[in-house]
Length: 414
Image (cartoon, rainbow, N blue to C red; front, side, top):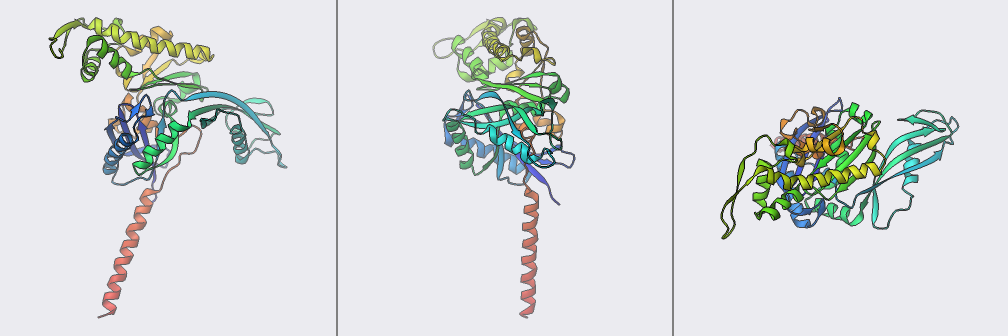
């Protein structure tokens, strides 16, 4: 029996997540194994230490492989970091076959033409995602294959990444004994797992708040219109608490998670919280409102940066379905209230949909939105799978045949 296997690897600043899934006949996914390991080798989405990153990858993959009962040779890997940029590019090709019918080869020529555009020497094209097709200047076409025409055009969302950053990711994954199947921008992966089709059609802003970076993606009419990565995220909030209150990083993270709010209007009950002393300084107590003010300044700064970005890109008026917040940073209480205040739009928390998790409750959490989306692949493209189970079955059959031949040889020699 053939089983189509696909694996995802989310390289985060605070954790590395690995997931292995089976693609079923109805194009859904069944999670077979899932693993998480602490991450110490990355900083703001960039590999800062290849050895430590490889160790974290190996640890997460070992857990996922053990739970799934199989090993997987290749993975879809999430990419983030402030080195990521995007642009829109419109191009065309001429249809020259006798029937003037558009084929898959014409789409390939269209993509190949985009790859000839001039980009900085230290950059590479990570994604070319068509937003909209035009056939003989007729717009609004999602899939032109089979249509007749003499000119095929497309508006493309082109994502660029730093070549050294990608090389460091590749080295880390390969040192862990794996190969990269696809590199996928993290907000694209997250959008695949937490957004429903109606939101993608009407217009939605996805904000994925991680430990080291915050990734955004604007999707309208089921196509990605804009994406960007910001270097402000959960770690900066924790560091603000650490520096302001004079506590160690672990204590700052605990205060943020247990008592923190993104905005004072979300505080349920004002109370005093204990701040543990360090060295000669004794314990003190502060009101929750003071802790919230520290957190709110950084979160408001982040949302203001994003609001300016989407306004400057000209897409603020396209966001009719509101804002979806995901990632570990979205779990901070009051985050949706602050987002609604800054953006003037409704907001909700996004968790991976059942279609992406196969019903595995363990990863139906915002912090696992990216890794759940990595198994879905790039929107509009065929999900690449590996027939791992079939290969294992063949090995068992060959072993059985070998044993049977040995038996026959033994009895023939009697």
